[in-house]
Image (cartoon, rainbow, N blue to C red; front, side, top):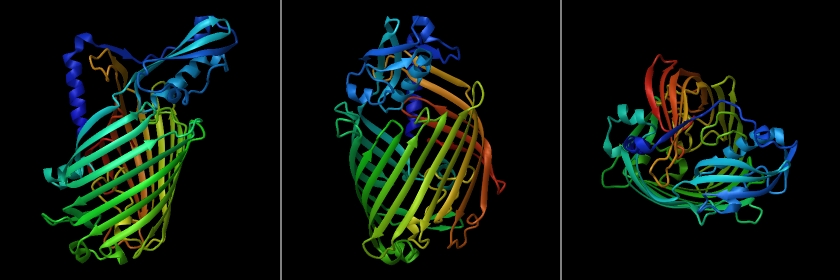
Length: 475
């Protein structure tokens, strides 16, 4: 919901300031920098000049570039080189716009001008967020109950000290009361390869789900009594040897507490831990990201693998799982794109506390068309296939907003088909486990500033059900 308010605000600003705004449409025409500047076969980068980085340090920008001062490149590759580096800088959560230029010194030497427009890094974020899994569940099954919403205030600096450090404090009221602190420093060494982070959070609820019945969550509420409490703390280390590869190691402590009401309704909720589960979790995450746009990829591929080891201090068996995500994105026509995204998880042993058995239907893991269902299990697979058409790709410039002078706007009509499978050794009365699931449909994606994504989709599933669904995330 916070994004809908943001869109409304932007549209009002655009309408009110129309006489001052220029619109730049993406051009498909080719440009030959070598011929335009009359350069030789190879050129050397003499100097890199930065403009507009009032907060961001020079080293943070240079870290992302494919060439540095003194290095050479084939002149025929200059246009590809400039576009590649523009996309690299736009992948940073720092800029609203990036433009690159070459300034000829002689036939074999150029200066490289990089002009950026910085985002608004330090600002309070007020968000209205639904507690349910998606908008449709809240609107239809929960009858638009305003009690099932959170109001969150976050004070965040996304470019602390100009080093792309992230520092945030969050206070949340509503369905889930929460307090959280987060810090991440991407680079602690001169070579900019090693980073560290830490986080801490407290949360409590008067209402929570206690079991899954016929692939639907069942809730219990005890007014004026917090029936669940959670404490989490984590420290992390990141190693980034190159532009596309990241290794993350994280040690996390979790402490769940529930009251007698939940134990009576579902003794399997925390299993032998009964009313309190304290757990250590060690995570290793490998990311190889070769896509053009990290926020909304259109070309390239990415692989993300998780290996997680969990151990409860008492009342919980040792658990290990491997989770993977692979995505392949390709342009196959002038404005046509296709994508295939495969996700899956394998867990051992299969007998785990109910709270740890989530598979499809929670967060971003679901077969489209089954947004109303929860499918628990220890192993699952999910395949998403899309064909998209770029209907609009523009930049609205010269806005009278200091930290939002440029608004990119892209619109992609699409068709899609999803397939999924969840294995659950203890399926109970679930009728969607241990069988193939399929959903297909058509929709439109809207992508704009500050990583905002809106998906409106009309989907059919194998049960013969159909409906219009709204999502505020990527696929």
